[in-house]
Image (cartoon, rainbow, N blue to C red; front, side):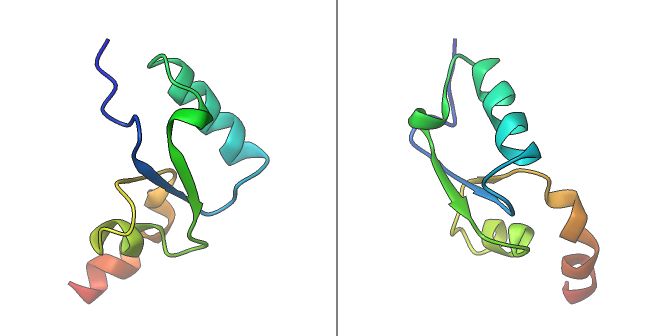
Length: 72
């Protein structure tokens, strides 16, 4: 199975609770665990962190997408 997120930085707005559980399930479906990626708490700067290449992927970025669209 291909594991494109292995060793990558994943931006989250919360590193516990709902987002941690969701990320764990998503990673497990690809044969990975949270030990295989670098989870970075970027607060509410999810899409900004992705656009600036601070992280390689984000979780739940739709919440902040509209503000970045306005900036573009």
